[in-house]
Image: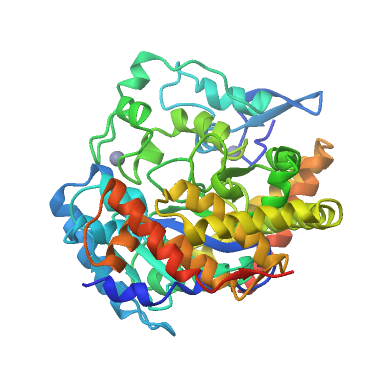
Amino acid sequence: MKCHYCQNPASVHLTKVVNKTISEVHLCEACAREKNLIPDSPNDLNVPAVLQLAFGQASAPIRPVQMESTCPVCGTPYAHFRAQGRLGCPHDYDVFRPLLEPILERVQNGSIRHVGKLPGRHRRRLTIARRVELESNLKLAIEVEDYEKAAKLRNAIRELGVEHER
Amino acid sequence: MNVSHMTSHLGEWLRGSGPESDVVVSTRIRLARNLAGEPFTTRATPHQKAEVESRLREVVELLELEQPLRYVSVAAMPAIDRQFLVERQLISRELAGVLEGPRGVAFDEPETVSLMVNEEDHLRLQSMRSGLELEAAWATIDRVDDAIESRVEYAFTDEFGYLTACPTNVGTGMRASVLLHLPALGLAKQIDKAFKALQKINLVVRGLYGEGSRALGDFFQISNQITLGKSEVASLSDIRTVIHEIIKYERMARTTLMREARQNILDKVARALGTLQSATMMTSEETMELLSAVRLGVHLKLVGDLSPLTVNELFIHTQPAHLQKLMGEPLDGEARNAARATYLRNRLRTAGSSS
Ligand SMILES: [Zn+2]
Ligand SMILES: [Zn+2]
């Protein structure tokens, strides 16, 4: 069985519920890690990320060990963010990512992926990368017959075209 | 910098004209940006903040815009001048009084653009317009943002977009706000009904003054809530759709009032004007309520000799810091309320209700 995103053999198998139809998603370890579906330690599955994939929402309680994690760049502990609501530095988005994603989903109405303006210096490179990704997701959505998602993706691709003209 | 000379004019966004200005007071769009590789302001040391300030100050002063921006240090400013800039909406309350250390603001003479440095984010860019001008405000701030970004690297990832201190701003970092004056819907007690549609598409409404409970003077600000997963253009389009709906409701309510309760409206406006012309003590809350009625009267053509610009000027000039600048001395409590009443009496001496 091959990975959903690339041609490598799949070693991670997830069951996904899309529009009440159950479908299976198979990924290689590298893609699963890249999509943040498995953590660096093999015994410690990233529950919020998996739940998010499976149910479109996250509901895992936060464990004490996560509250103690600290950003190595600015020294901000995650607990400080929870108390103050403000992050310490741009790197925190990376360090606290599994903890932040469910929060972002909640405050940002379910979306955790930037759409819109790109800084000039990255515009060309990112636009191309984004188009490739959206097109592969579109193909995937059509395969699993998620037409609602496919329509959204087509819109996103069209918007990207407009952005690119700028 | 001496801010006193600024009392002689108002920001461009308060000129009281522009598209749909019978209902829409102003449009404002802000972008939150941070420098790559620097801690966010609240975690930065005074030394780091000073560095961010001097870097951004240099960039801002070199920008080639139609209207040059002038940078002023807020940290070095007397409290009353900071309050003055808050009243003109050039800086936030946080930048004025809550945050500490090196920080400042750059703005142009017509006050169409303001850039706050070391607010919660390193840079808060704002563009302001009179009336409903979402496209124009976006075009301006987008251009300023590009010009700055060509000289500094912003904290940005492909996935989360522009990274901000608070996750509620991450992504586009954009908050577009439209300030509405809805006195007829207020009188008809239909505000809630008109706002019902907002929740569904993730817009936030809040009263401009008198946070929380009832909005003073029926001024409401509508903003987008979502910054991640929705482009600037899509967000602006959502806001525009809703604003046009609400404008339609407000105009319908005004027409109905004029048809069915013309004498009552006329009386309300005339009483408001009369009180402003004769009272000897006036709180800012009462001023807000009365000027709201006068503003409605101006747009319903019930008041002669009074322009929307003058009404806007009275709103701003009766705020504490402006009033004290105009009077040339510090005033508190009763003295301020007396000075406010005197100022309003003088300014409105010649205005009369027509009909
Ligand atoms: Zn793969
Ligand atoms: Zn950090």
